[in-house]
View 1: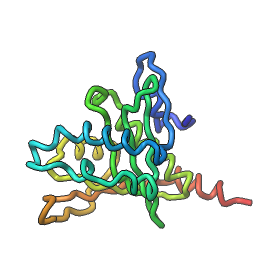
View 2: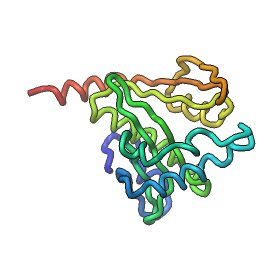
View 3: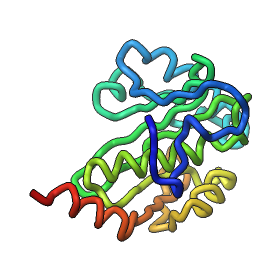
Length: 182
């Protein structure tokens, strides 16, 4: 997917290396790939939490039916994904997963920017997400990307969930008005 807005980098251009990168919508045939990639990406959190994070146990057959999941491929290998759930007034980021060997290369940030473009095409001007309060690395990333903490929610099984959001602002509003003009 190409992205003409330089403020929102194209995930396929996230790294400056010579690798060939593409983003494509996952299909039900990708369920095993989505599951394996997510499990690998979240494995680092198991010791911290004392359990597998929720994305490691999700039903990706259902997620692929109910949500939008875009895969970032580098030289044909699935390296990262973003799972999005369009709602009436916002786009919910359900999951961002980057394979361990590709973490730190900007792929997660690029996929977050990609999700903002998806929201704009759906005429949505707000992004939302939630993450575990213990995932300080994720909280720093989301804050750096312009997300603000809306609330924290204690869950008896899963700990504290931090709910965050980001308004897409005038660019989204201008884009929406351009799309609705006759």
